[in-house]
Image (cartoon, rainbow, N blue to C red):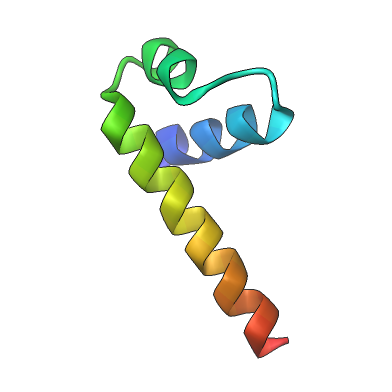
Length: 50
């Protein structure tokens, strides 16, 4: 959970790409990509609900 939040924060800063984030968090790049995609999907749902 903390890694996911860190990935989202790093991505949001605009200073890191998915490869950089994966390297910093010592995880696979595809996991970072999936995490960011889930965050985007959740944001869309929130916008529709509110």
